[in-house]
Image (cartoon, rainbow over all chains, first blue to last red; front, side, top):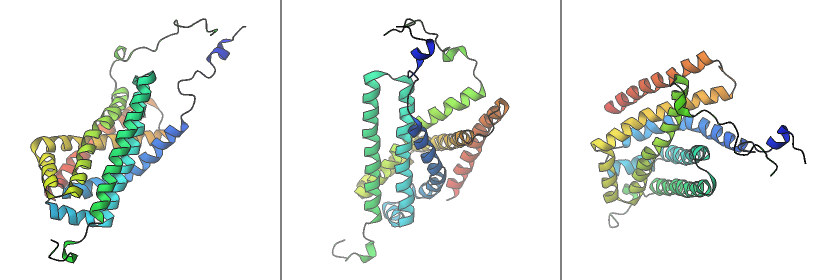
Length: 134
Length: 130
């Protein structure tokens, strides 16, 4: 059988597919372009404040939504960015295992942050809780 | 396989062969800052988990995040964050087909470094007064 140079190379490109990776990166980038500055200047002032102040600050649905959206999109964006790094430098089974572990950790962290923020956002306002409970 | 050329394919020149240029340096810094930002992300996630857990956990998290080392890591992460954001914006602009010429790639590379530094100083100033 005779193979031409072109035939030998066909289908052996680095990725074979991957437009979804580019698309995910662009979508999360645009979202973070807005979310990150808003998060930095809403989170920055409350860092260093006391427990009661911080709780009251993130009981507000607007600050809570900004924090939850920023952290969740960050995890999606980071997972994709980390995969870009791993795809460049790691091969074979190690690459696969690293990507699975990264997804596990990053989605886990995103959920952990989300549940924490929701719990704070839905926590009872002290003035409305009977004094006996406090 | 009928691939007669196996093992004798041309190799890409290695990274160390190239002289550092603003185009390559501004590119690798997007990757470095992006990966480094996981540290600040973990610290912030910790802060929220501690806030949801209770006053004792929150006091510990706040102490670590606002002590000198915590301040240093978060303060430098502000630069990484702005650099990564500006570098990402440059990528979105390129993906849309803008300014593909080399001199513009070089100018935008410098703009990322200078812009990130200016934005970082402004952010520090804001946090100093609020």
